[in-house]
Image (cartoon, rainbow over all chains, first blue to last red):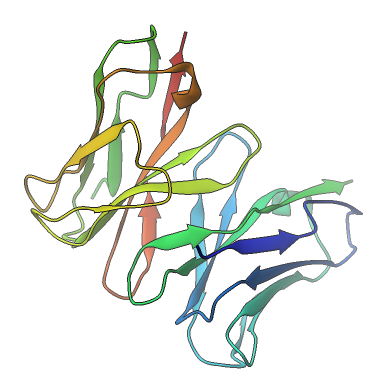
Length: 111
Length: 111
């Protein structure tokens, strides 16, 4: 079945450093979504990418969708303590709206 | 506009007991989902409903049943709870574009 992997599993950074998480799917995706989950909270939708090679920015966050639509990345510039949490990517199984989540990257920001 | 609501917030069951987790959304979304998240893990899809009266199995459906009696509500039933079903259960809803809104979760412990 479809698998969605993320690396790294954990990342500790000093406040002000940049952070990147990578998402790789075993199959081509029609779109990819990114979520943030704070400790003890629920996933919160960040963005959806649809087009091959698409790049979208939200303030300090930059999202990319690969040309082959099998990988994606989230880059955070100059991390802040408010960025702490786990970042998940999710993609739909082929021909459906059933979203499979990646394994997640847990970010800790040291002040 | 409450978004996605889930009841109960917490539940402790004994092995073999049954219970129903309730989920409701007030955004008039067609698609609804049930995910489970084990400690330190990602989210796994249990069941999906594309519209009222339709349901489809996800990655980990064994031991669960669902019911989508109307557009607003999607319930998850554990007929005979097992310790392996100890988890946090999240309900989510989405529009056709795939945007997803998660509820606050139900934390279930099976002893």
